[in-house]
Image (tube, rainbow, N blue to C red; front, side):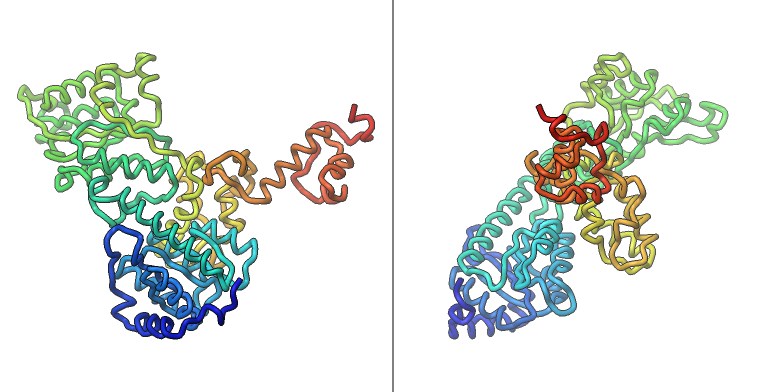
Length: 500
């Protein structure tokens, strides 16, 4: 590795320093075109000489670097300009690089952040990657390695921009959809699909477990459609009694039934020109299914007690946490209504299939509930994040939000600790797939990998800790100290009796 002095080129350093110290150059600027040249790189380090040094080297390789020495100014800069990559020191005065990374990823999930530190440790690297940092390099970095990482991050950023271009989503670099948080591959695919389906005026069925955000997705479709300036009206089909559901959907006239003291427009009429969202559609009572089908086919409704048809102009979106095709096969749902609604189907991934988004979601909910409760809670601790990531989340994002709300209310620290989480989350030791299983969303903490392997060895030795300790290369007492290394079946027996 070259020395820091060997990197220094005075002419370029002076040029970079003069440019970076100009307020206009720090807080304004746009990426030039879509090629990889002149990519905007923001360097954050409280050591100005390091900013100059890195800036000069990056500039000599075709990038457009600028620098700030205060993390707070970096956050301000990102609100007023477009940046391709952020390169930040880990240890700085005021705000650490990890905290800066967390805040950047929360506010700009598409922006790659590269962390540099002269105090590189495994713990720091793991913490950085859990916060969705793009990469982690020791300081002073090898310039060629840094350039390669920055160049790769720039290409990654540009691909993200193209995926969310106006042709696909409609709003360029703006956040794809309000309330939809996630950078995992399943969420990227979902956002792109919502962007394509939104402008198409066809019926859609959203499939997903409870708490996955089906209504958020429906609202996103509405906001990307030509109907976005008209009403979005939602109804939970399971929440309205059968006797009132027809009136709720189609309206009624005065005197139609005992409490009908005046004419009342139904949901389809109130959503004129807009979108109707029917949640839990498979819970729609069988007597209402043919009436809904007729309304969709004829594009008109007949209010209860009326003999006149009222024309309707709406787009219908439906959602369910059940398998509609199975409901059709079982005779609980009309096949013709199913085909009328299920023109396009969109499936929302459960939280356990996008574990890499848990950090972003947790940070978002901490900020939300801390502001709501007036509490000084800044985030979650690494131990807490490990528990959150390992848990299965049967209630999905809604359950995560409830857990974070509880933790924000109860914690006595500035960061939520594992002890602040609900008991079922703290106690969970579920079988989350390990590193060999594939996608990063399914990776688990190192402690969990160790626990599983020791249990496998114990199972293979029939619970003989003496033999297991020999295989693992640790002292027998080490296994007894592990509170989760219980005997799988029967008491220890001499090794020679266990092995054939």
